[in-house]
Length: 459
Image 1 (tube, rainbow, N blue to C red):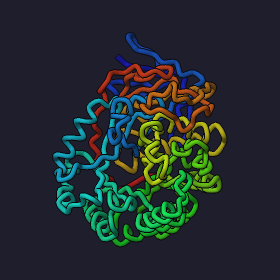
Image 2 (cartoon, helix red, strand yellow; image 1 turned 30 degrees about the vertical axis):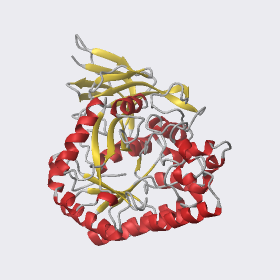
Image 3 (cartoon, helix red, strand yellow; image 1 turned 60 degrees about the vertical axis):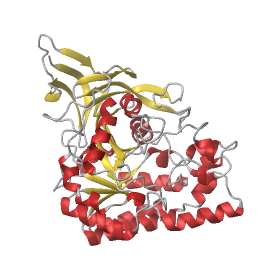
Image 4 (cartoon, one colour; image 1 turned 90 degrees about the vertical axis):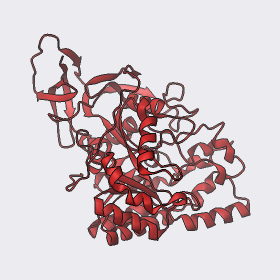
């Protein structure tokens, strides 16, 4: 049985046009101005609506906290317009790559959307043997690594090891995702602040200044230049760091950049809210100034920033964030956002006139697919997976924790009224969201077997 999407405004990374779409066996079979229905066809009326490629979130931390697992987190993603996910995952101490892959594939069985993994190489369990096992990782369909330049004493990796990781990655044509902050200096600034008695949430930002993010971006780019590696800077937050990105790209370094909705929409004043409300907004890098937001939007328009991730890392306010009520250094770093990523970018980007529809598709879907080798995703074209999001531009929705699917007790964007509503979501041709409700089966998601890329077409 075919599914026909009728009379929608199809939006791709290059253009938009009114068309019908036919779906067979989970893939896009035909695109034409008008397609004649056949007996038994199922029809979805998209009159007056946009038809986008499904959103792709390449930065999430599901099953890494006590809140969202793969089921709740991917249901939240789906109702928000995301149909594919790459999750940050680390081996347990002493695990081999094969054991790590087996464990995380088991954890991900409850996913309702298609997924893959980034392999985190953590400083506190750094083993050359893991680098020697990269062929096993590739055979398992994972083509990207993640390293941290922050969180000294735990996940932070020193420069010599960063070089070693990048060199090994370059040999296999893997992409290395990087959390870029200067962990050594940040640790000292935190110590000084706590000794002074400066323990409120706002000091989380003041001990992680933009200069230390910019320095780490420049350092990561220089190491990548020497190693010949392709790198992906996650959650870029400020103008100073973006300036280093521009310098690096202009000298030919293979470098892509992601930012997140929180850095485009929220600013550091949230950390100063009374009654410890500011603790809800603690993430790393921290929220920045409104001038940084403006610089990031410029970076998106100019093509320096290629993708939008959620960096979804879900904690409860009452039971988790409150652990740092007396000391910002004890507040768990991370905020929720997988559910609202897609439509926040539509609202603040498209509806408010900051970016075009094509740029929207590029940063939430097409570019992430291109960078990370999701070859059947991120585009509306014959033969691609029928991962589609139908958005009613005339709808409106107020974001609220009472209606969210994310399993935590607050929402960063509580009370924000966004333009546009997700009317329908299809994943491999299956309707999984209708009028904001998840209607698909549990555990229907599939692992995406990725391959390395030689040529990239990132806009």
